[in-house]
Image (cartoon, rainbow, N blue to C red; front, top):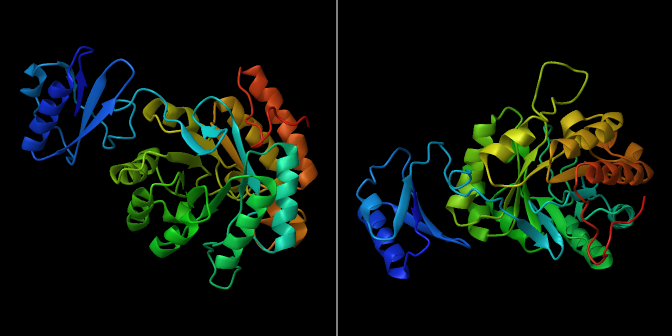
Length: 350
């Protein structure tokens, strides 16, 4: 349920509505706006009879939120949420944010080389895994704490904010000390304990869609984070598991406009995992921008043929430079701009 207050409602009117919601046994969430305040109701999983609230002083309208998710829905918040991870790097405000870097942090030379290359090409953030969930227990699992230290070094040298994955509750706190944005991977999209933890931590979260998850599943997972008081969530389409072996996954481009109609949260696209094939990453990245994605997540490695994970889908730095030039052209054609690297005033020419 969402209670929309009149433009002339007083603070006392809002407080009275909050008291009435508490009397029903639920939690009120006041949301002041430029013109008026709305008060949301959380703690219920079905429709609430709030007819008496509709007659209270200062109340303009009572809206029943019909979706199973509440705080992430556009019924709850019609305006886009803007998630900022660093000065000048924001999702949902119209600029296209490009996050790029290797799948895994492998060494100091490798991550610094990658960070310098993606910044030079115009990326706004550095991605790289210190902890890597892998299907095989024998595959490279990341450098862990050492990897986080190297990411911090790369940020000091390049100024790029860091996006890196947390795999469990304890790791989320460790990652939060370094990362500007905590990534929740596809395999952990429905790890509800981890979702609650990052919700309580409060740092921006990049939430990837699970390999077999519906859009409703994704939005309900985001609801866990918002329910803990953290509204700084960016969703990510990264492909679904299918039966065709031509690509690693089925890249669901339709998820971008569908999510944007259903939710106020930003959504980005990961064409690297969405295809699993280097040659397919640029065309799918271009398509995602044309579809309206708020950002792109791309794997870039100085020497993909020697990468310890995801080398087959990682772009060479020169390929990424070409892609950035193409993305700017597409963004310009649809009235958008690509966010520049932090500390610069304009996008770097390709």
